[in-house]
Amino acid sequence: MKIIVDAMSGDNAPFEIVKGAVMAVTDSGADIILVGKGEEILRCIEKLGMKNIPKGIEIAHTSEIITMEDDPSAVIKEKKDSSMTVALNMLSDGRGEALVSAGNTGALLTGSTLIVKRIRGIRRAALSPVLPEDFGNSIIIDVGANTECTSEYLVQFAYMGASYARNVLDKGNPKIALLNIGTEETKGQPLHRETFKLLKEASSGGMFDFIGNMEGRDILYNKADVIVCDGFSGNILLKTIEGTALYMAEELKGIFTKNIWSKLAAGIVKKDILKLKKRLDYTEVGGSVLIGISKPVIKAHGSSDANAIKNAIGQAIKIARSRFVEEIVESIDNIKAMVENSEKNS
Image (cartoon, rainbow, N blue to C red; front, side, top):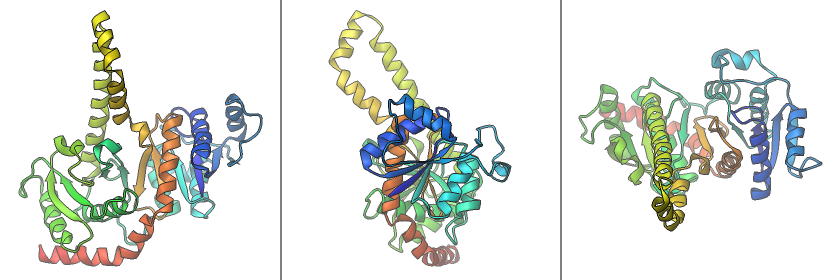
């Protein structure tokens, strides 16, 4: 198993990316291609106390970097020797089974669509993070790739999310929920009401179990395996979850360091606090898969540290070993027919 890693993208690149890749080789035994400026990658390896390139690590030299400020719509064409562009071309050419990047989300989505290509018949690729295991390993699809959606897009998201849940998360008959402002069928904008009808009809086909609308407050209670939403709502939901987790961590730290008594109390519940912190830590998941792209592309968080990169690589390996993409390819004609049939019956 060979994983391509964009070594120059992200807030902590290249050191944390390289460190995470080295950790992943030790942890999983996979081969990794680090794509980026060779001399900088070598300096990172030396900084890790290694005189030679570790076994399982290969370096593909590039001369350019895509930054967070670059225009996603033009950067892939303008920076052809960037670490991200070269990595995407390598994936497209079959030099690796999956790609991990912590870089510019828009550029990665655009590059994946133009270079690696979407699965035939899929209208839009979606950014789909996995919630931590203690919250059921549910996925949210989409969280920012598509801010404007049609009901057809959302139904395709449901099918693709179900395939991911089944093949990667080992969910036998995935439960699908539609993010909405209420649980009643009549709630939401026309997009949500139409999508509800289509998902209800499509659910009868047996590929997933549509359980209806879900409010944001129920997301972390493991009631669904896949939460379907447009990218605008999904991004707000994800950032709210992340922000709440960070806020709670800071508040708990303040409470338990307030005085001698609170410090004593902290010592008593230290293990439980650390467990809670780990449950809410995004680095334990690794990244978000771009569902709908013909080969696995994992978008790691821009501020990823080595642990997050290691886990993103582990996630990429699991996806590459699954039949997730193949199932969507094999089912696309059936999915299209069921969507059309649902629209006729609605």
